[in-house]
Length: 186
Image (cartoon, rainbow, N blue to C red; front, side, top):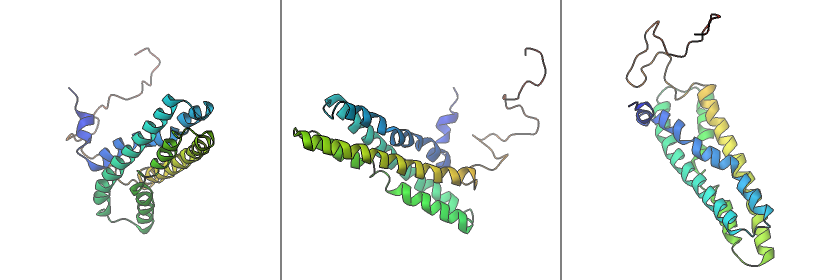
């Protein structure tokens, strides 16, 4: 049995990379169930509950991702960062630390839609849609900065040729992903 993915949880950087994707998806796409709820005139109890659970999952995921980011940051800070890298790391950290709170704004507003008065329900629901856009913007910015840390500055990734899962790559070792460069069928 291949335990490669499970062993990734031992590395704080890999763990953070694995855990951030749940809140990214739920944070960015939260507008979709909110718009479905809006299409019902903010009346559908099922759509309301889906929206509330959706943003609670986004909040919990963001909290777990922020905690794992703190652990990953400890290893990066000892790597002798440049001023630009330090600034980028700080910006990502600032957005991520309190990020679990942002999805709770639509949760509260969606909770207000349980009030049976039409004007309250529509007002709170409309604000929840706007708040879901805010959550998506926050999530996109946090993710963009995290991606910049990895793909521009190379922070939190193993050095090329480093051991992965206890295995050192050797020269000429097949990865199993080579392209077939001839014209035959194999």
